[in-house]
Image 1 (cartoon, rainbow, N blue to C red):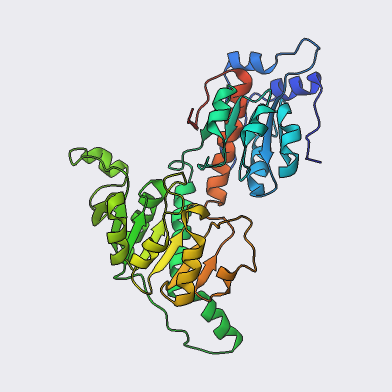
Image 2 (cartoon, helix red, strand yellow; image 1 turned 90 degrees about the vertical axis):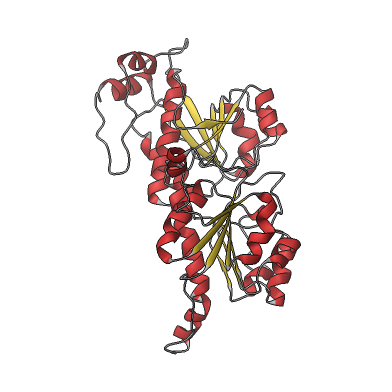
Length: 382
């Protein structure tokens, strides 16, 4: 059974709200500050004499810091109830909640139809490909993401991308073998210096990655659907699309050409019907023999059979992935038998910095929903 936080009596809740007129900021976040008008709303009772409770549901056991940090952030607000439930129990309990944080749960139309009291479906991050947005809209439920540019998520993912690059270039697996065999000075690795990097999808993660790659002495190619006009100098700098970040810009039509020029290809695309399987046989065949492929976005962007085949033939020089085709990924999968493959368990954005920030966003949204205030810190998509 899913974890529940015990309900508080009205007197306990009232004491918690009135007795604490000021909240000290912690090392990681500053708590929601309410106005005098908001305080009155927080103290409202329902007709049966109980305190009105706003309920937040986190789907599934994975990414546990998401619900743990949110629960910790809201511990001084007993009128906000935070639960996490196993994935197979979500359809049975979702009707009891006001907010649903999906994580890696797929919310189809049948499940959404059961969300009788739901007001908001949101992601603890950016990706909403698992949510039937049309069904949510039909049922009057808002769907939202937490933009990555201000949360630390994009920065965290960019750093993980460089970790995967360096791990492959310096032959992480072979180094561990050398330690076990008591060898010194072996294997011989490679450097980022002088490499050409193709960033496929120049959004927030791609921008943060380019900023961090510049000091390594690399050439950066990047593609996105549209680039700011040359006259938007201020916007270009703020969005990281200034010429000092990218050596050559392109659109979707240029992806095969850029892939053929790159030593390392990094996939940072959003997952949708247009991008699913975009790294396919034709794409990988266009890459230089021995080039590295990094996926920091979603597993479905890569065509599994094409990746496996090109690892077997040696055309792919290495694969670094933080996301997989199915998650959790099978540790006995054939892709993982190659020494030039590094996989991490979808932790690129899972850092103390980003998760504390996003927990604060979820907590503040719950408090705002409870008091009827406008929701901040999120981007609605319907």
